[in-house]
Length: 341
Ligand code: MRU
Image (tube, protein in one colour):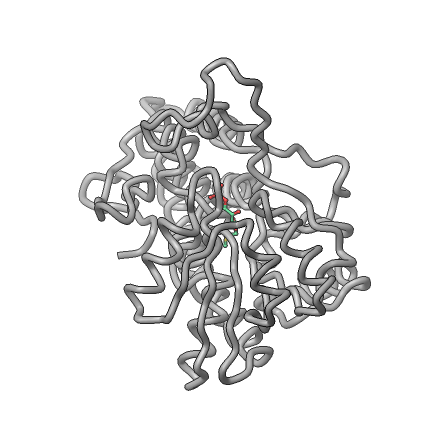
């Protein structure tokens, strides 16, 4: 099944609970906006493009579950739900993009029935487009990979971070479909281990060769010549920086030092044409994520903790950005992308 979808008989959102992987593959249902927000906050659904779909399906869910009988009442409920959803995670721009696009889609609805219909149609379109765009992005990116390459990646920018196929891992999937022998080094991605729990799991499901390393090994493997390319996803791309999972910036510095191409794969919906790096809020997460490994305590309970979920990689460290509209090379990137948008 897709990472996130709509359950048509009950009009609920269904998703793969990513917090349980790789131990258990379980589909869960979100029947209220509260349960959807809980799922987003706890990373049951995560990854920028999947959050875009979650935001959009969330507006559809609000439309279906609202008790309002008037058009104005329903629109007010949808706007409130949209704000609540956007407030769950601030850095990945796709979340607010998905909410805003779906709210816009219901603007011309003439009655409550049309609001529900338009919202759900838009959410399904966003989900379908995500898969299609990732495949296009994958084709563009695959051209940059050579037979025999070993690609290092960080976090999970795979099908579980999207509706399907993936961005960074989508490029690898497309290259392998073309018959190229591509191997992957997956950084574990502390503190929540999306790399070791999710990236390795989904690549192994697809029989793509993957080797797990700790985040701190990236310098060693690049210095040893064990990595031909780095490909990561993105949560937001401004004119001057790429926001992605904490640790990405360090990998980019090491890649630059060792002249390893550093690629970012992301759909155009991840671009922020309005802001610069300094204006973006980086999500700070709970200290328990560092004090505990699962339920096992690994630090003094009263230690001070700093736990940003993302970092910003300056554009000068990025070799190219792979999108569904082609490959863009800094520094002209934003204007070129905007023109093609
Ligand atoms: O905190 P997460 O797991 O939502 O962070 C996800 C990432 O940083 C991904 O690399 C990014 O969203 C790209 S997903 C295609």
